Image (spheres, helix red, strand yellow):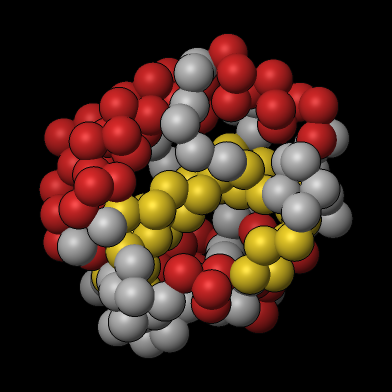
Length: 161
């Protein structure tokens, strides 16, 4: 059984409807994402077509998100010349908190603000962190809910490239 099927079964066991679980499908186009950046500019995921994209859903209060941040920053810098764009998706926090998180870890990429949590729901973010790797054609290459090691993140980046 696939991870998404296990997750759906677990949600049913605790009484959450599977309709609340909108997991992106590997090999299918990534769900639409249109959010403001932490600096107030508009961002649309489809504008990055032709680039590999790593969406990292995070929040400043999330322990694993804090643990992963430095590694994600280093991998972002390493793979940017090869066509990778990393986008942090800050869940349910202010622009100030998102900006402080990016600054604290010296992250070389920007963040978009999912202030109402809709994008998180569209991507199945029932917890954090959430990692979505999208290939150059705009299709989901891999999806992972929960903490990833630096080696796992790098492997997923290589697959998306």
